[in-house]
Image (cartoon, rainbow, N blue to C red):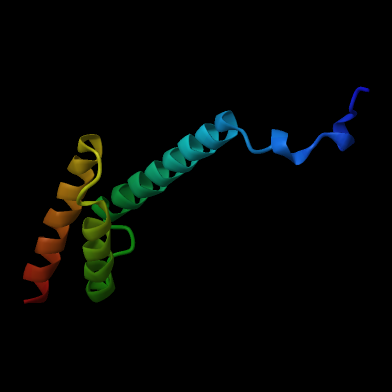
Length: 90
């Protein structure tokens, strides 16, 4: 018998192709958000709360310090900015 669209088993939802596509989409989204954050931060948008900025930069550096080599330039930029904030705060 043939199955209509509403009768398809859910096992077709959980496939390797869907898992790989979902993982790739999540990585692209995370990269876009991270790039947007770094762009805004480098342009001075959202400045003023250096204490919170230092906390977020430290978390970012900690979480991404062992990331792939192509992400390391962003980590180094964040690490440098964290050091600048620490110097500014005294």
